[in-house]
Image 1 (tube, rainbow, N blue to C red):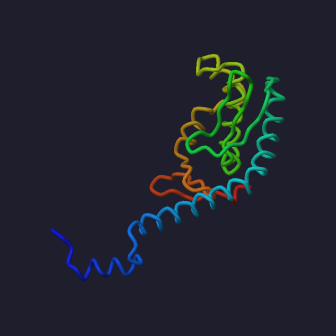
Image 2: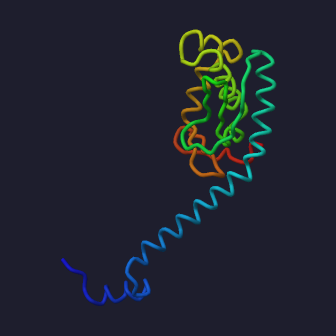
Image 3: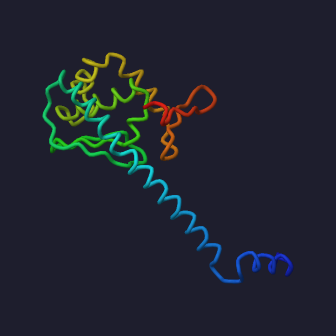
Length: 167
């Protein structure tokens, strides 16, 4: 069923009468949101880098692994990763996690320097320093990366903000 002419004229007035204006306005909002996200990431990246390096120094003193490079990235779904070349990558949001979860992420990625899989040997290496790693891993899975400035920690019924106040 076609729209009545008065509604169509209202839309034309609201959109300035130009075709594609709504799409352009939507793109503008999206680009502003992306720019705000990027600015938030850049503002927090250096603080996250210092946090990760401090944690790596502490935990690697117990393991003695060699790593080549540490990168702080803005990833949507990963807390960290390790490559066969000895590179460690961490999401900048790891610095916003509760400390026990951040420690788990750091140790997990450090152990990938020796074991590039999730074998028994890998989990034994993680368990050496984090005996409750299974509990922490389960808890980390309940943490959602929602917005650049917030990390929501799922509780029983409702997510709870554990973002910037964790520094």
